[in-house]
View (cartoon, rainbow, N blue to C red):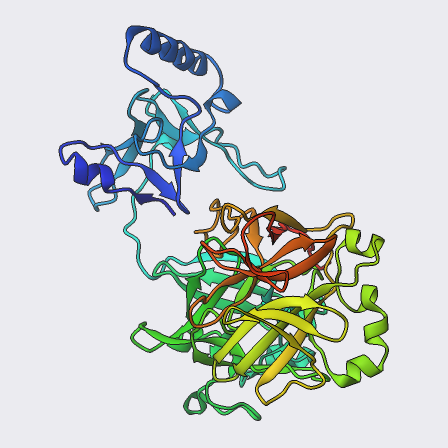
Length: 494
């Protein structure tokens, strides 16, 4: 889907050139006229002549999508009508400003022997060929963008959205509840999604073909489902089957917000119930949107990188505190130096209501040391000292091993980010800082660490702040934030 950039039209109303934008990137020529002196024009003309002397499929003429330039060089195109139909369906050519070359496919062959079925977009002398002519269609709500993703929808605590493992579910026209469970990487926890032109999102289970939907009994009863609970129903166009994606800037995480029958946002998002030890499944509801809650999700191919496990007296009694390297993650250098510090986080407040804060800290096998309200606190999970407090320990991290997607980046200059791909739907930056918690004053905080006397201390960092750990309440030097590299096509499930 291509859109026009009106910035040039607003600044220079008499000019007829626009940028062609796809997912935030501009259609760009392989070279452009850098300046307008005689030498630059001569060099540009020679390159254009070389392109014209070769076949349009030659890579020297291939167009690319690159970040949009403020000066628009190599990115300005004019739409020119060059054919007419009495029924109002006209043909247009797209002509680049400096070269006067036209957009066209590199070849018109069907490409049936290529797995990708792709055809390169090129710029080439405008010679009136039919495949250099385009129709312009006014966008409307009947033009969805289909993504055959075949991936999982994973919560920020590492569990996957799943449907009942029942082959008969695909034929069930009533629908069924949807829940979180441990990622099994099977056919039942795979999803596709469709982005409609109005930017709403439709989520479709890959096995049943049913749509994700907040339950309303008036539209058909589902046993065991409560109002507002996440269910799957046959896709039939009803408004509740569309969602608004709320992107968390420069993150792989996003929220899915329910919309009403007028397609207006409801400020209620997909949020899972609290996960308790021993739970095989956790229900998901639509609740108040809050970036600090467990209403953060990612699309991706399954990869078991980490998981938050609630620490209980039962865990400890089973020898967990004595088997630190297998019970929870510690860095490779910590293991070598017999440093048994790990990562924990303390959740304070009502998780189900979304009224809570999450603070990351250092796990010492029996205590979680963290910072809250500028004070260092040590919490023994076996004696939490009141209701509404949960301690979780980070487990299963794949850092420091072959094929690991996690690594540490310096955060002395701020939270590490990669804006490329962050505005895509869904977001796909090359790497993403690990969003670990938040509170009312800092809704998004990231897992950080500092080293003191040879020991790693873990905590959290917000934009424009230092790393808050028990090594010092606000360390601003030698601090690092955990990041995950984006994994593309990690697993097909076959």
